[in-house]
Length: 322
Image (tube, rainbow, N blue to C red; front, side, top):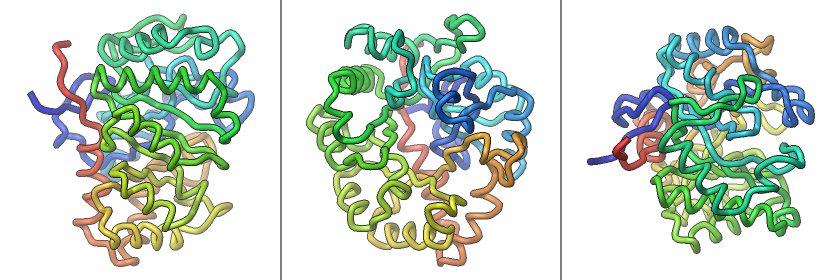
């Protein structure tokens, strides 16, 4: 049967994905996330659709939307924007940091079996739409499972253990990859060990933001030795470091032999999308950062590996009967 990429508009062959950025946020409705972080409010269909159209014009083919169910995700808008622009969108089920949920949320009240069933349904049957539309089920399906680690002391909370167990069970049942948000002061190696101990294949694990939360070549290499993917997105984030430093780190990693395990993205917010008033857009990697990578010595083969071929392999799931 082979692998497919599960987009919000249906399954596609991996080789039709094109240039793919593996951690973005296209829509987030009003709610707890945007109350805590105002830049996490993006609920304008036209603005995001223009952003995707500009991305496609620059050469973009697909994006992974990393906002999970019942956490501001606007699944119906993801479908509509993908249909309007022709950009493939891979949506996330799963969970974010628990601080982003009200006390009444399923992450606190649901048991492991209920949560596992929710994630599997979203991948195999259809996603839950936004709260403002009534949180009804739609036909568009999720294609990855978002997870998040908080500070190490918070991770000892039984809620996270329940959520991660549900994500692991859902991944095994569906073949969907687990996308892991790594927080400052959290241990990516410990998380990797936990997932591997639960028999999650390393090629089904993507660790995100390590280039932001722990800018350390040796630590990254230690993670990569386990066979997992690292998704880098601290691009044009000068509060952390400049693009030349980011490109240098990437080149080090590639030269160390891990070219098949690196993915790129921008981790977009309303402060990183041109059509929401920012000074950059979803096309920044293509138009601005790829030239920096080329100056660092990376040619088309390596760029295609990170932005075309690796996403095809990292995001593939086994075709179901649906």
